[in-house]
Each structure stands twice: as C-alpha cells, then as structure tokens.
Amino acid sequence: MYERPGYRTLLGRLRENVRTYVRKQLELPRQEIAEIVRANLRAALWFAIALAFALGVLVALTVLVIALIALLLPLWAAALVVLVLFLAGAALSAWRAYRRLELHGPTRTINSVKETVRWAKARLLGRNAS
Image (cartoon, rainbow, N blue to C red; front, side, top):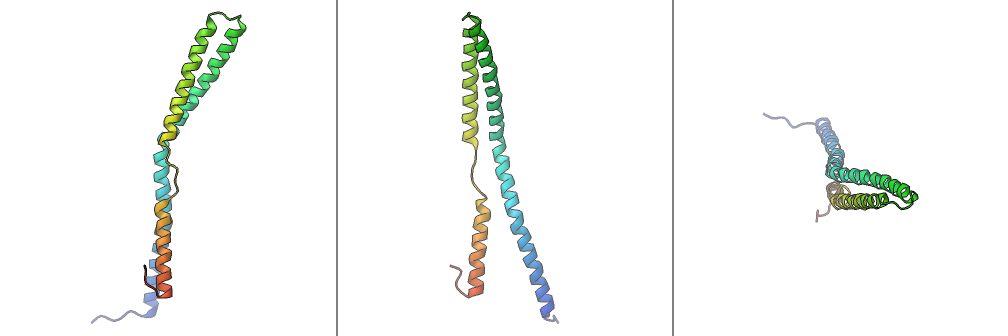
C-alpha cells in the first residue's frame, strides 16, 4: 500500500516547485529580450550602413569645399553630385533601419507576471480567479 507523505516531504516538494517556478519566471525575460535583440540586429546593420554613407557625405563635403576654394572649377560640380548621392544613400539606409526597428518591452513576461499575481491573490484571498 501507498503511504501518505508527511508535511516535511510535502513542504520540500512545494519548496522545490516554487524554486523551479521562480527560475522559469526569471528565464522568460532573458529569452524574450534575446529575441528582441536578434530582431533588431538587422536594423542595427542598416544604421551601420547609414553611418558609412554619412561618413561619405563628410568626405564629399570636404571635396566640395576644396573645389569651391579652387575658384569654382568644374571639379566642384562633380563633388556636389557625389555629395547628393551619398546623402540620398544615407537617408534611404536610415529610413530602412528605422522601419525595421521593433521598440517594445518584454510583453509576454509582463503578462505572465500579471497572471501570476492574479492567481496568487485569488488563491491567498480565496476568491475566484476571474
């Protein structure tokens, strides 16, 4: 026949279950934040491309200033075209990066914690879970 477990055994099981539950609850935000970071890596790549184009704009601006100092020779027109092209490339890259950003918190974790709090209140206060 099966023997009923004592209070010490039951409390030990309860303590272990609570530890496991807390460990899982702490693991959830880490996983969710890692997912958000992975999703935003592509946006970061586009920001890096935009930065490269912005640096190109600075180089083109320098060439433009040199060309203007050279008494408005036709060289400045070429530098101006390069400047406009790099500026357009930087603007396009930055716009694409901004569109790909996912700016939100760990919503599943927040909802899970709220649900746990509701459940605990219902159990501790003896009310319905609704």
